[in-house]
Image 1 (tube, helix red, strand yellow):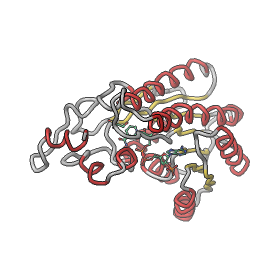
Image 2 (cartoon, helix red, strand yellow; image 1 turned 180 degrees about the vertical axis):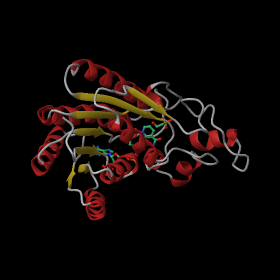
Image 3 (cartoon, protein in one colour; image 1 turned 180 degrees about the horizontal axis):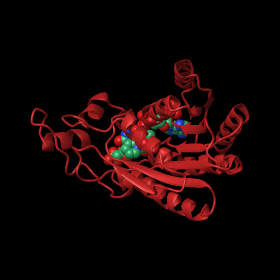
Image 4 (cartoon, rainbow, N blue to C red; image 1 turned 60 degrees about the vertical axis):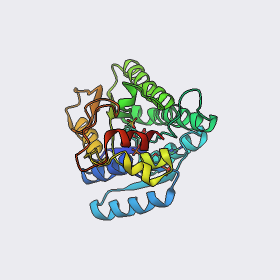
Length: 271
Ligand code: NDP
Ligand code: 8X3
């Protein structure tokens, strides 16, 4: 049975899509368990949302690559809030844009350990709580990169193809239980993602130059919509792109005429 005020546990809630999901779910009466490494951001967000919407919000510093850290965050959240119903396994990143034969270990490990292992660790720790709550919804945040890879994005794409495999397997494993499993797979969304990837503000901004990209709030709205559907309706996978992005990669993006040319753009981004 769906509770009146479900508890949503969100990893990567300190910015971008995770933060936007926290804001939207709080506005819809969800209680929150917010995790990320930047604890101060989470505390400020939780204080703001509790004040604005009167919802209970728990925060925990967590590194999703670390099993003990994840277990501690999830169990503390369940103890503080009494249950966990919804999991948004969102924490993730791209690190650099490297051809497969050039990628440093550090970037490869950051992506595979966070985007694949971190997601498994989060869901593995949270599922016992979700199952005992008797109603739940697990969200993976995949990507268009999980549907088509691109030059320099091989390892990131592999991690997001991995998300597709995990979501598929989990749906099979939970069949017959009252827990829905959805993968939301966005295209270009303007968050801190590109800044984290390039560690260069100009290059990060160039990615969105002349287009109207998705925002974190747009992706959060997809999560809200899937949640609000009747309990017997499961959205397996939702690919969402901004209107200016026709392909899964940046090969067909509508850059407005006032922006720099597509070829200059490609070299700015791919440098
Ligand atoms: P942001 O960089 O804005 O947010 C990423 C979040 O993940 C931050 O809150 C960050 O928090 C958290 N995070 C990263 N590493 C860890 C870690 N080891 N432990 C805990 N938290 C971590 O990017 P987005 O909001 O865009 O990204 C969210 C998800 O959406 C990612 O999985 C990304 O792959 C996916 N995505 C993004 C798209 C885009 O174009 N923006 C498109 C498709 C998918 P902190 O640093 O405080 O730990
Ligand atoms: C993020 C979208 O195109 O940068 O997952 O890989 S993309």
